[in-house]
Amino acid sequence: MTLSNTASASVYDTCKAITDASNASQAEQYDAMLQCVGDSNANSIDVFFLIYASSLVFFMQAGFAMLCAGSVQLKNVQNSMLKNLLDACGAALGFYSIGYAFAYGGSDFDDPTKTFIGTENFFLIGVEDLMFWLFQFAFAASAATIVAGTLAERCQMAAYLCYSLILTGFVYPVVVHSVWSPQGFLNAYAVNPLWGMGVIDFAGSLVVHLTGGSTALIATYLLGPRRGRFYDHRGEPLQTPKEFPGHSSALQVLGALILW
Image 1 (cartoon, rainbow, N blue to C red):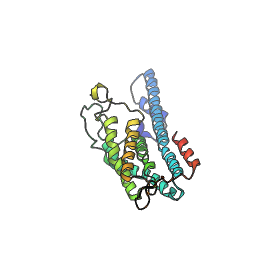
Image 2: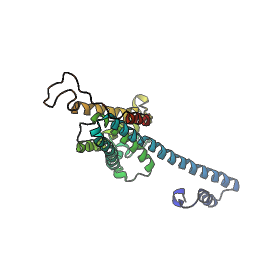
Image 3: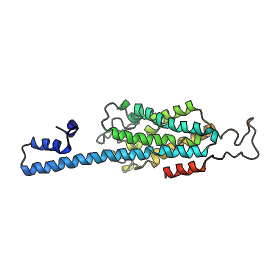
């Protein structure tokens, strides 16, 4: 009998049933009871913390949305809001279907084998710790939405959705697998870490922010400046760049404080 098999019963009743079934002495049963209750509470706290942390990371989507909305022209606010929404939707689809499998599929801390990407758990098949997936999805969505501001007012909606799917379905998972998966060649906790120490990235400064920032830089270079900013509609350079001021300083500050 395990705690997962008796979810409808209280923790005390479940642990008591487990200890009563043993042939141990009364003192040993008391110790086993305390250990069982403690393990159950620790597991509940772990689950709550992951959900809470996931909600905080995902709330960054609201911060980026407000920051983008305040930084664009009034006529483009709706377009910017929809792109931020597509970030979350595209990230959910991409990371659920193949992204998580490429990032963590088949992870085994006892296996010294190094792989380029994961090869198991597509569509979360065989994944038991869904809270961990939720936590990682929040980071994947954050990596995708970093690019939203750099593409503001100059990217079609269909192209942006495709970008979100590709980034969270393949590009970001490859980086995650390299650093955070035990089969990644940069992981510090692998059996044979790189140069004996590997890479430690606790909060995603490399995995999340560098990936999103590099993608944003490439996207900015490919798309170029906003139309009418440095060149007129005939392609002739302007003597003085045209200002495109954001329409709401209040939304900019609100977004910045949320992200902070």
